[in-house]
Amino acid sequence: MFVTWLIIVVVSAEFLMAAYAKYGLLDSPAYGRFVDRHGWLWLHLAGGVVAIVAGPVQLLARWWWERPALHRRVGYLYFGGVLTASAAAAGLIATTPAPLSIKIGFAGTALAWLTTALLAMIAIHRGRVERHRTWMIRNYAVTLAPVLFRLMLPVAIASGLAPSGALISCLLWASWLLPLVTVEAFRRRERDPLKHDYIPS
Image (cartoon, rainbow, N blue to C red):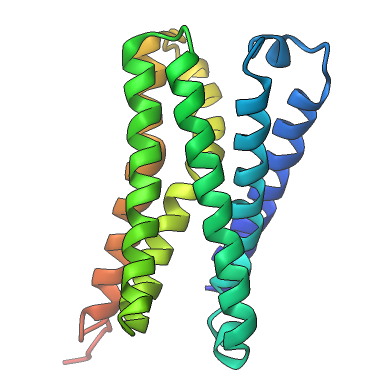
């Protein structure tokens, strides 16, 4: 578990440095694509960095079990980041000249992000701690969608696929569906009483 957590932290840190450096240069082509939409962009980036950074801290079970009050405060900060980034994403989607398929792909990601966050909040307010934890793991899997998308796009192009709207749309969906499927597979394996142990005859 710790190795997985460490990999997530390292990959996320690299993503943040690359993405924010790209948009931090005000004369860069990437930043120029958001003319008249810079406000939405920076709100989205700000909320996103809060969620990506706060998420791994919240997933340290022993840490939050010993510090419930601090865990709650960081949790509200995390949800604030999710809500801010999602609201800004709606503004970006509504104003982007991108094809409809890409808009739908981004909208699907934002909806999955908000839905899993809402279900996690409902669970903890009802005192369902384990259900809350499960939904938070799912939510953070969706939080990492842009990180995975950034890894998959160059791989897809290097494999010979043209960087088309259809490809980008498919990768947008895959960037959060694949992590969710992986999370569910691990959860089912943990619930398996046999745990795939070898029993000698």
